Length: 519
Image 1 (cartoon, one colour):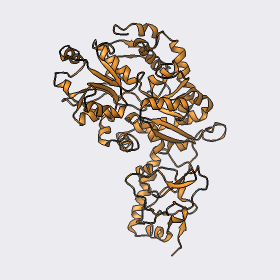
Image 2 (cartoon, rainbow, N blue to C red; image 1 turned 60 degrees about the vertical axis):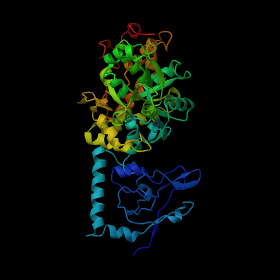
Image 3 (cartoon, rainbow, N blue to C red; image 1 turned 180 degrees about the vertical axis):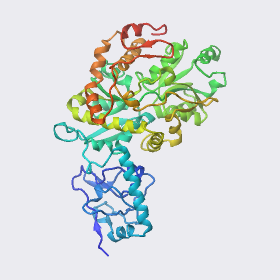
Image 4 (cartoon, rainbow, N blue to C red; image 1 turned 135 degrees about the horizontal axis):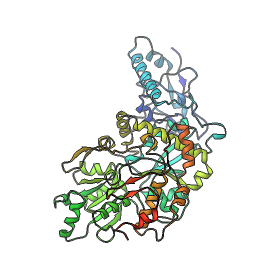
């Protein structure tokens, strides 16, 4: 039998052995070495190991002239070869005779190997993807090459971070010559601070937070940029079960019950200039409840909402999924309203960054946007892809919950926790043929009007000028061309919200001043 051959490891400490993470490999039925190493600060150590896969020296079939770091398809063998204490490469070897046995005619392992290759190839073909070593993506070389190839993107554990995560997990980022490094953050304040100080390149961000920073509210004035929308819809307002016991089922009954409760209710949102604050305020005001005079409002990070309601710190909250669904499953609250019932197909999270980053790294900004556009299209393309996405982002390293908590509302299937089960005509959308991703100027201006309505802005800004400065439609259009994303006919759109008030961006100052309930 042939002698053992060593797996070659890169000598450049910035080079990874594997071009896909273990979790991506699992997604595509691709078996990677569980002991694949990356170099950090001069030391070799295990990297990107899926929680369900042990570091047991998985063997792989070796293809001629294809190193372990570029190997695409293989069969998991039963080896327990370990690295030494320092993780040096001399402890990682695979035996070629095992590989030969695995693919020998008539071998059960050959059948498994062929099925693995077929499934993986079909998956990559369906996605239009290939490892960058096998296929060069558009806009990845020459004068259009990204100026910065590793892009750290912050995210909060919410369902709507999905397109950022899947762009990395599916390897779409490599097609555009970049590597997306998702960075899980604890709060929106942390996202804000890390964007401003450069610890994050971009972020899964609140639309209102980006606009607030531009005009100097919710943080120090910083020139900001919105590269694309990440989703529409998919948020909600949860009320405590104790309110339901008092006859509350919606906003109208909440208003009625408040007269007899004998105490002031407390509501939570996720950040003072957030989308969630604006949805909460809009919904309360539409039922003649003043969000600053009639109730108390506090700020709580999204993953902490359920725990805080459980111990009685608030009577209601507005947050993104899956934390409304979680409250229903845990039987501590019910969904009083979804945000798509407040505004059908409303803007929500964006890919945000600083103007400094967008101007210094325009090719990188375009590449990141294109990769996430392609991931968003993949997610929206089928219920099966949505379900697969839910399973991936449910992981501890991302949203950290059960996939079943995420899947239902991603698919638009809602159980509000008090007997109403329905399919939403406007579920969370990540792509929507480009409608969910285009950075409409009118969307950005709307958040400014609400910040003025609630006294966060003391005077009217130049709404259109601010929107044109922040929403980098130039970068988006280049990314749309690279990813094959259609463009809308107009940079503005019109909508009518739950109170019947139309919005089209034509007169934002009059719109902001036209509400009966305001500060």
